Amino acid sequence: METQAIVELFPLFSVANPETLEWILSVIDEESYEQNEEIIKENDWGKAVHFIVSGWVKVRSHYNNQQTVLEILGKGDFFGEMEVLDESLKYVDVIALSDVQLLSISAQRFLQMLFKDPQVHHKILQLSVRRFRHLYRRFQLYQQTSKIKLIKTLIKLAENYGKSIEEGAEILQIPHQDLADVADISLDECEQIITQLKHQGCLESDPSRQLLFLTNLKQLNHFAKQI
Image 1 (cartoon, rainbow, N blue to C red):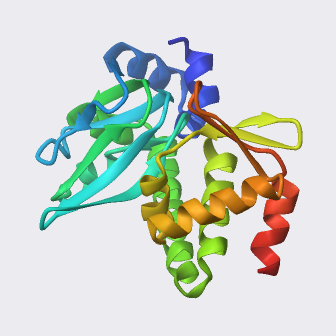
Image 2: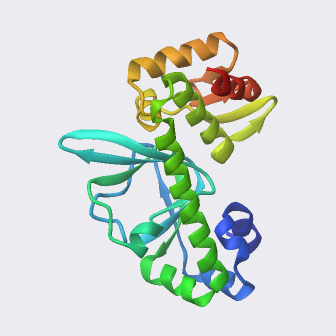
């Protein structure tokens, strides 16, 4: 990957000096995963930081024989940095929701990068705070209706990782159970709300290409505020 491409795709590197960028490109590894392939196993956290060049992944907890999707991430995001900086996660893995292309940097080199470039160090702190702010907002949704929870989840995925289309956005057609987990609603509620939103002209799907279209973001935002 060229220097300009990595800067445009990953905000973390937008503040890096030219020397840091050249060094990153010399030590980073390219990885490919197929849909449903395990990217990080439970005991592999803390070994590297992974940057999503293309595709979608889910961060999944499995404890007491129960699996729950904690987060869905897409192009331009990254994961594993917190476990390099702090204690590794337990009972959590990462699965490819689609074919995925990653850039990965080992834990040792990631820490070297932070020491090399104070601007990158500062940026990673900003992005970490943003993650915690997002988590806090999810807790704020706890008392909201299931429809608000799901709509705001879809809007967040579209804004962060979606591809713009006329009047809306295109995202991966994420399995309903995974969407339900992230939105903290039941599978039945998720399926009923999606059906309702399709009838209202806000969603369309293309199963052959595994795509979900948010065809009216303005209306979805209106629903999220008015329900």
